[in-house]
Each structure stands twice: as structure tokens, then as C-alpha cells.
Length: 97
Figure 1 (tube, rainbow, N blue to C red):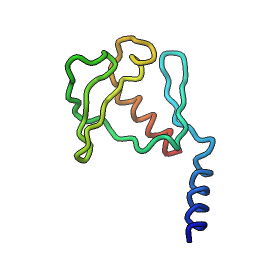
Figure 2 (figure 1 turned 45 degrees about the horizontal axis):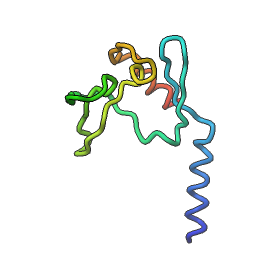
Figure 3 (figure 1 turned 180 degrees about the vertical axis):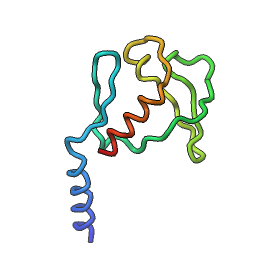
Figure 4 (figure 1 turned 90 degrees about the horizontal axis):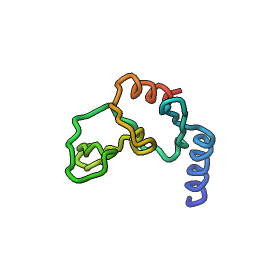
């Protein structure tokens, strides 16, 4: 039984091998291997946090869990940026393909 479970896990990992979620910052493209992504959700109201780095936008409540919201553009580039709905939709589209 344990061997069967290990085979199933290995097969699932194989289907995710070599697949990436990509996003662009300015003229550069970045990718994260899909096996490290748990879920992508639409934008939700963000509660700001005092005394945090600028790239920490705040937190959201996701099914009772507190999730930090990090603006990767600011984290990588340290520049002002706003979340753009069309960029989020593009990420969702990339994941579904």
C-alpha cells in the first residue's frame, strides 16, 4: 500500500516537472516552478500592516488563515507599483494552460 502511495506522489510530481508560472516585471520575465504554488486566487481586500517594508502590502484572510501579501515588483525592484487586474488574469490564464 505504501509503495502505491509513493508511486502516485511520484507521478503527480512528474506531471508538474518542467511547468512554470511566469510573470513579467518591466522588461524581464520570471518563473516559479508550478509544484511550489499551492493556489492562485483573485484579489481580495488587503489589510495594511504598520512598520513593514514597502513591498509588504499587508495581509488577507483566506478561509480563516492570515496570508501575507507581497508585491513582488517592489521586492525585486524596489519601485512603486500597483496591482493590475489584467496582470492577475494573465497569471491565472498561464496556470490553466
